[in-house]
Image 1: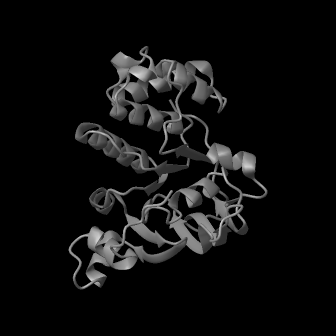
Image 2 (image 1 turned 180 degrees about the vertical axis):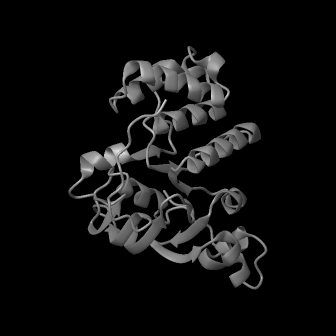
Length: 262
C-alpha cells in the first residue's frame, strides 16, 4: 500500500528544513526559549536535537510542527514556508510528542482509526495500514484492548504509529523512548531506521545520549535557546580532546550544573 505524498519542490537543493533566525519568547518570560537560531537539515537525515532541561528543544520542535507561533524569524520544510503553506505543511510532517497523545478509554485500533481519519486516509487503506504497523511493532494481539491497560512501552509504540500513518516526509520525535523497557526501545529504534531508509527525514530529541550517538547521522547541542555545536557524532567526539562519547561533548558544552526548573 502506498499513499500519495506531497511532492518536493522542482528545485530541490537537498535541504528538507531551513531555519533562519528563529526565536520564541513566551508571554511573561524573562528570556527567549529559542534565540536567533539558524539550522539546515538535509533530506533523509536522522537529526538529533540534544540539550539539558529547558534548553529549548521542545519549543523548537513545537514551532516546526506549527503548534507554536514564532516570535520572529522564519523556516521552511520541504520548500514550504510556514507562513504561507500551513495546510500543506501539516500533511508533510508527522509529530510524536513526549506526552501520550492517545485516548485512554479507546482501544489501540480505535485510537489509530481516529488519528488516521484526520488525514483523510481512505478507510480500507487505513485499516490495512494499522494492521501492518501493529504487526511490525508486535502489537497485533492488543489491537482491541483499551490503551489504559497498556504498559509504557506499548503506549510509546502506539504513539509512534499515530504519528506516521499518513507517511509524512518529516517526522518529529520528542523523547520517543523515554521510560520504556529495553525491548520496546530496540523495537522503536529499529522501526525508525526502517522508516528513515524509506525516505523519511527524522528530527529527534532525547536525553539518552548513547542512543543518540548510535542512532543519529548528525546532531546539534542546544543550550539556552541557541546551538552550541553541530556535526556528526563521531566528528564532535574527535574534536574534543578528552571526549570518548557524545555525553562527554555534551557535558563540556553545557556544563555539569543541575538544570532543575519548575
